[in-house]
Length: 179
Image (cartoon, rainbow, N blue to C red):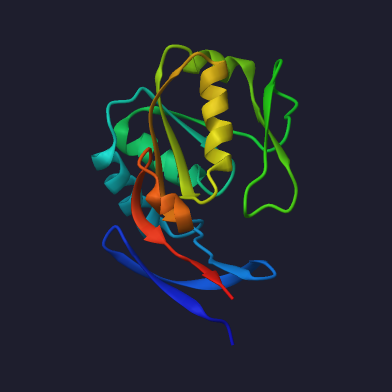
């Protein structure tokens, strides 16, 4: 029988399934896909805590619904960084990343036209969960390459030691589960 962690965030409660990510470590799976109520409430709460920004930048795929909803509520543009090079991309820029939830190093891609949109703009970097911070670092690299300005880095949850960071905005802490 699966074990669960009871999460309370943005005035909502969810039971998150514990999933192994290593021989001695489990994490609570926070999946916003399909949870419209969670997505809307978290977007609203992150926007309340965020400084002034011009554009939202996020990585594919789990945080795209959050970035979309934040863009809808704020009236600002959002740009998703892709996990694969797409045929429509013209001269894409790439950054490599290794996160806790992926087995291998991934290469993230951003179309040159999207990179140009970020130039000189105040960028709000958004993710669903910040854990090791590696995905966040990759997004920061895109902003730097674009000569943009990082307005803030935000997430719904800060997992494990990420909750000790002072450079991120987050709504709730999410523990990790060593065994």
